[in-house]
Length: 89
Image 1: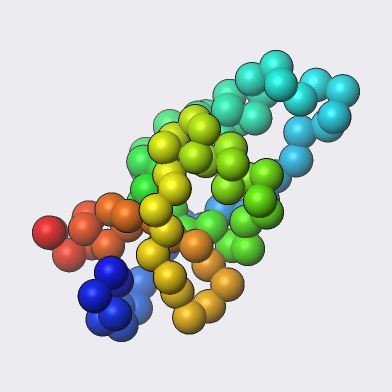
Image 2: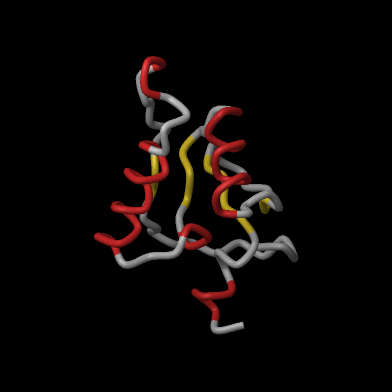
């Protein structure tokens, strides 16, 4: 977590996804991601992102205001609030 405490969790993980160049900037990526959030009943800050690309990180920052990541010892990226919901903080 933000204090350096090791916490083992099994979060819902998201891989990068791709929207074909011919239909980018039409809102389809956000529509897909919002549908997934609704189906999984989660908020974006509750997810772990497996090796997100810079474009995906920009997407998350733009649409979901996720920018302050919490450093991890693995390839996952989590954002502020990820541990709060698990620890009741």
